[in-house]
Length: 350
Image (cartoon, rainbow, N blue to C red; front, side, top):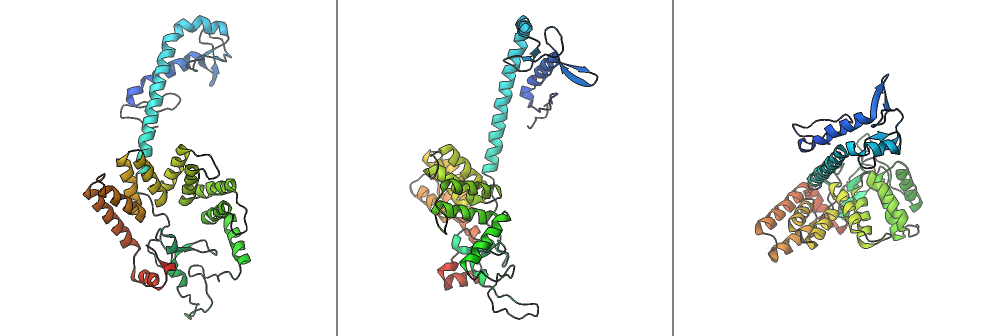
């Protein structure tokens, strides 16, 4: 818990802002009523008669102890004022903590997120968010730009290797579906987040020989999300948003969309923007949509264009969105990528 310049720390180590420092003083006073040092050991004593071994706690402040109900009743009048003051200040402290937590969450939520996929380990350019723009390698678990998977591989003498191999780890590509499935299993055992996420998708859709099981899919996505896979949390949010395997729960959907967005997932960010817009929170909606545009999510750009057309946002807002999208393109574009994309839609990256 953060403290202000004039904040203080109670005996229990809780740091408070200066406007609620009074709870520390009352807290310490009440604790002293019910504790005593005896040969460096803190023992409970009755706040009324002083006997040791008190374990009957005040029902309101939970701070003062008595040896029995009789002592509690006798001491009630003397204790009442300090007890009520502690309860009041504790409520203020809790309210302040909630306010600060909300402020910190907002700051984290709208902070510029990291690139969801990082950079291609072959060409070292930022990986695009479009799914056709990158491929997942079952050998090393790396994400590589779609065109780079065909980069030539050379042996130690500089001769080009004829056999198709992963350009990163130089492992030959699997020759059968069984070999590919075995590689997926090995990656999952190594806690590879993408491999675990993909298995969740197989269970969701009932494909690749797996039965449809939404509960199993959610379990796998939770695990993948904890390992850093942003899209996994977005899928969980979508499940709660649309009732896929769980009851519709807007609060939980929003929670998982936020987790995903803060990890860099542009679709989750876009969903947050749409939801805020539907609630009439245009400023928050625009913030989310602008961040998604900066991550290359063109649906967000289209949505901002619609908001500009109907007069909801300004020309300046739309101009900033266009500039943000151009900055994204400048990070991912290259002549080599354009050449690959022109050759086949399989290598399209924006």
